[in-house]
Image (tube, rainbow, N blue to C red; front, side, top):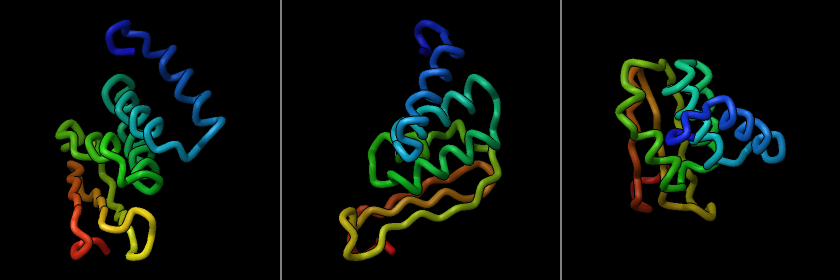
Length: 113
């Protein structure tokens, strides 16, 4: 959508995709970026990002979006997402906090909570 600048079309497709699977982390993260960058809807973007992290914090794209410095100073979200030992994605944790979202990753089984 960026190359075409078809923000309305992209948002329409994100909404359609989420109507089918409201927990699809990659769609949630991508839609969060659109809301942040193109719609300037920071609260909605932060809620979307939080949901993406809750559902797919172990996915590289979701982690990349969360770590993006463009979040700094634009949202006020405090949430923690972790993976408990024994779960399928053990060893991966993501945390987003503060004004100016800061993302942290724990890729070691010793540091995942």
